[in-house]
Amino acid sequence: MVSNVGIVDRWRALWAAAPEAVVLVDQATGRDWRAGELESATAWGAAYLHSLGIRSGASVILSAAPSDATALAFIGLLRLGAVVVPVNTAATPREIAHISGVSGATHALSDEPERFTQMPSHSVTPLTVPGEAVDTSIELDRTVGTDRALICFTSGTTGAPKGAPLTHGNLLAGTTALVECWQWSADDVLVSALPMFHVHGLLVALAGTLTAGATIVVHHKFDANRLVDSALTHHATLVFGVPTMWARLADSGRLFELAHLRLAVSGSAPLAPTLFTTIHSATLSAPVERYGMTETMILASTPVGGIRRAGTVGRPLPGMSIRIADDGVVEVRGESVFGGYLTSAPTDPLLRSGFTDDGWFRTGDIGEWDGDDLRLVGRASELIITGGYNVYPREVEDVLRTDVAIADAAVVGLADDTWGETVAAFVVLESEAVADAETLERWESLCSEQLAPYKRPRSFSVIDELPRNAMGKVKRDDLRARGVVRSES
Ligand code: MLC
Ligand code: AMP
Image (cartoon, rainbow, N blue to C red; front, side):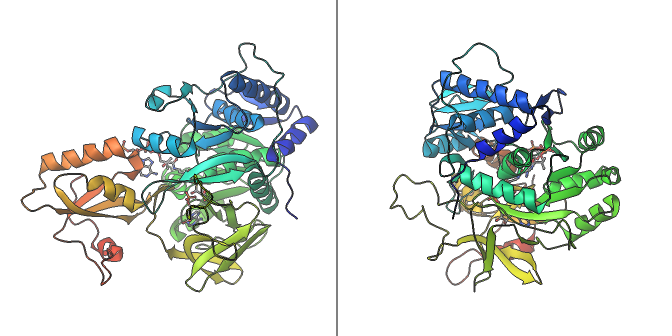
């Protein structure tokens, strides 16, 4: 039977049992937060948010660089019963407007309030430390497992990001499974520079640490040297990163200084076997690779106590079932899997899109079993993953097609050693149009205005026509095989 316990109860029980334990450290300021302080600071934070008019059930955008303040705001919102809507700090006004519209968010917590001027909401800075007196008699910690905790936005095949609500129960199930799988204990110290607006940084790193009763050292921004220094200073046992971060750590020449880690964990994008080997040789231990999704939290991980093989993402996490459909798509079921996309009406087919009739969620990844381990061999969708961020070609193509000189456009991911993939655009010009320096500059500024930086094409190739199959579908493999035909950026 699925329990209806929420995640906040679990955290508060741990804080009460060990109030002196250091839970959170802000690397930039050196400020640390003991469990007892975290309890009172987040109760104050929740009361402060309440005094701003935020009520249980309200959707609130959280968009800030990772810091202790961001972590406190996240916990305070959950304790109040509000629904956290994480937003990339690089989001453009167009992207913010879409997310606030779909989520119905009326407030935003941000470290750069000016980014939210076009949003019909009150904008406030993230909480730092308890300040002015507020009414602390409000009701807190009333949430149960079925209550909504977050709405995460994922890039959509149709171009517009879709909202994926996760409940307090999803969070508890997902983080408890990780704690068990990675034998994550109160003795563990995680150093993380992951952004706190995605599942990886917010739920795996931060919420995972809280559920483990462990310690997290939060970096405001990823910097390889600073991360290694911090791992040494804080006697880190865990480092989580996307492959691009591990590639940069390898480039720094200091990976060997992380040999004291219990686990070096990579996820969010494929870890190249060569990088796996580099990490293995430098740290004298094979990295752990785990596979997850916004809609499901973490699905699989290579084993902590067994052999971890390059190119595999391991076995299903406790409580998670994985099967491979006839068409090769990985399908999953488990308590951390969301219940369906955000829609305005329960009859909207978007709600259960991606689910099979018998209730399994289709990930869109193509996989195969290699013994007990899952191996991801491709994607059914056109998703591009660059530096751990997802880009759907359609969104970029739609923006490009608004330019007067562009008759048609297709966007693909080209393999890249550091970023995994980079975004490459192929465009067909309108007759009479020319692609001179001025045109290129216009395309670049169009993309800058409309798209977050990681979505912008790193190259524009002008071709006579897009290769299409008999059904009229663009043959993206053909474009990938061509590489950059004529790079101008
Ligand atoms: C930054 N840039 C990127 C980029 N990140 N371009 C493409 N892809 C990216 N991911 C751009 C910047 O805008 C800038 O552009 C230029 O690259 C150099 O910037 P930088 O300062 O060197 O980059 P940096 O800020 O260091 O960012 C790199 C990074 C970051 C790897 C630290 O991308 C990152 O934090 N990635 C993690 C993403 C993540 O957490 N994903 C988890 C999703 S959850 P310009 O034009 O200004 O020069 C998920 C589920 C799961 O997938 O399984 O976990
Ligand atoms: P997101 O929508 O940001 O949650 O991204 C989810 C997608 O990231 C998955 O569907 C996979 O394609 C990809 N992904 C996550 N972890 C891994 C991994 N370890 N290896 C390969 N791809 C991964």
